[in-house]
Image 1 (tube, helix red, strand yellow):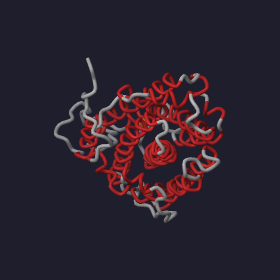
Image 2 (tube, rainbow, N blue to C red; image 1 turned 90 degrees about the vertical axis):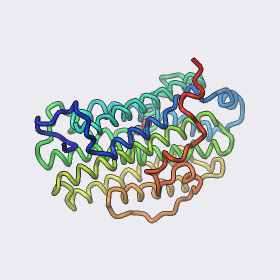
Image 3 (cartoon, helix red, strand yellow; image 1 turned 135 degrees about the vertical axis):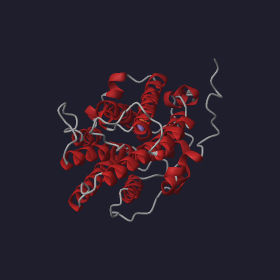
Length: 330
Ligand code: FE
Ligand code: MN
């Protein structure tokens, strides 16, 4: 059965035999990474947040990242359920989309937990995209890419329709989860390396581990659709996608400079900007497009968290010795 099934001969409720082993593997990897935010103690974060452990710049960086991610995780979850699920009919891909939707619910829960623990005003946290232009621009950029498949009458009949759909997949999997999340990951993990807000940092590590699977699945999905619909991915379309990615890099770099205006914990905005270029080259390469920057990774320690070169095998290297269920006390 093709990924995008436009005929009615195939039964979407019959998952066996598995045709797309890779989709099934992402599902199993996701299950192996199970976690919930409540397992991570927030006591030290709360006393640091209420004391004077953080500089004003560091406090702003925490607030902006919590503000950006709280909305972005929800946008991603809604896109999976309301836009993608209807059209991706291959049962093993749908099984993964359900798993991913659950993980996005866990991520949404993480920001509820952080908001509650640190005593944020919800209006303040969830209104961040309204007050911070570089956050609003990132959200709007991604939402703009999905406008056409969001129409109720959208169907996938022509090559143009497939391209619209691929553009949505690139928007959420490659741009939102694969680029717009990564400056924030580096900032929060950099803070954790300075023993600041370690609870939130650990939650970001778990989220990043999940996101690296989401990006991997999204890229494999895009490439499979591309294989199954020869002629759709023209040179012009490739150029268009490459431009989307480099435009996204520009927005993410503006965000990095605004979120981190002065050197914080030995990391500079310029380094975050380089890191975003390094990640974007990796994304272009995954889509078989020419790389754009040739920038070295300024944060080699991020590779210990997620080896970008071996992202597919990331789930084999556990962030911590977490065992599913071990810390649950019923
Ligand atoms: Fe997420
Ligand atoms: Mn995700």
